[in-house]
Image 1 (cartoon, rainbow, N blue to C red):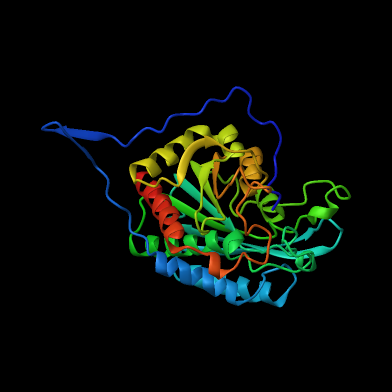
Image 2: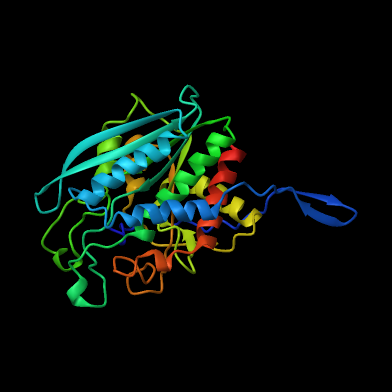
Length: 326
């Protein structure tokens, strides 16, 4: 995952103040009309743990194939339709990778749709691990990959129990995180990240696919997570981003802040650019760290010990609330 500065995407953009949910005044008392959405963080945590138990889900590995089969069977219990989109992609070094995007739909006949996504593969290199001996080892990817997928599996379970009125598509993108190692970044050039998303936007699972908007979840289960407004999202989808962050404020989720973070290359970039679907990335960003992300990013410490149920709960409830509001 090339979570670096994507470039100067936004000039003259202003920070939009967080608007609270509409309120009622009764006898000089302000009450918010907020119904907390249903989401089971324990269930989401177990979905994360099941993925991590396979080991690093690096493309072309046995663990990758085992997890693919698990994810397909897990979400097939809940969705109306599920499609496996198999593809072959060329990695930064020319090697061929076998990938699979998994696409599940609720109310597929409804033209009014919301797109939800996360990547399910894991980084083959712990290239930011403090121990240089670890920097060519694959990571567990508990946060960077599995957390977003775990939340979406729990959301799929809830949508099965409480049918949404709108159409919802959930995509597990593959081969997002197989970009060049940090110490070889000056050797390889090109768009070597988000290969599953790049394939899907050119080969959508239904012709002329469109959604009203989209939400990408990436690194959404870590401890002390901080979710500012990511820059690529703000450039392409500021109105959607503002709406979702306003919902977070209404729910009292202080992890979501109105500061604008640096722009990154992630799966949502290609959805915005190629399909013109306004897609927002909810991603843990730490602008004060050396990498710009949390301390476990692309290290062997990205494991279950650093997954926080409270973070899963906040993000999952926010996405569920957004679906219900639509």
